[in-house]
Amino acid sequence: MHEVCGPSALSFAAIALSAAQGSALWVSKNWSREELYPVGLSSLLDPTHLLLARPGNQADGLAVAEEALRNEALSCVVIEITQPLDLREGRRLQLAARVGNTTGLCIVPEGMGSNAAETRWHTSPVFDPDREDSTLMHWSIIKNKKGTNGAWNVRWDPQTRRLHVVSPVGERPGSKGASG
Image (cartoon, rainbow, N blue to C red):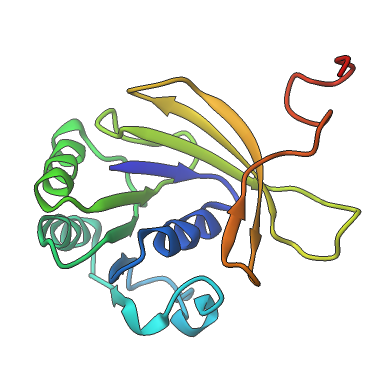
């Protein structure tokens, strides 16, 4: 189980679904006026491979996500979280993901997350004056149980359906003014 927060969290989740390459489930709250439109993700993934669940509350959403993670038929499960998860809830999701060999991703509000998460990412858009597209993002890994933290500028290329993860030379975090 992983977590993502920040203004580009939904884009991060959509790219994660694309990378998972298989059928996926997106669990979101049913009381929101905003609704995911799978056809809008067609540059990232086949919308016919995306299931949507809109449970009435977070407890039901967690139950749906846990069962989906445990089921080996899905490659990825995304759940939008609106209230803090306690350690028990986070651990249940983590164990279900391990049993089902399924990638799990919680979209969480900034400053909120579970101690059980393997990684937590913060994502934000980056203005790119050299290009007219809006796909440049800054991804920072702010929690990592099994490695180090870091930050990258990434760009989704819809023509190749690939993520470019290398920042321009001389513009990487910490490299300003460094000699080449």
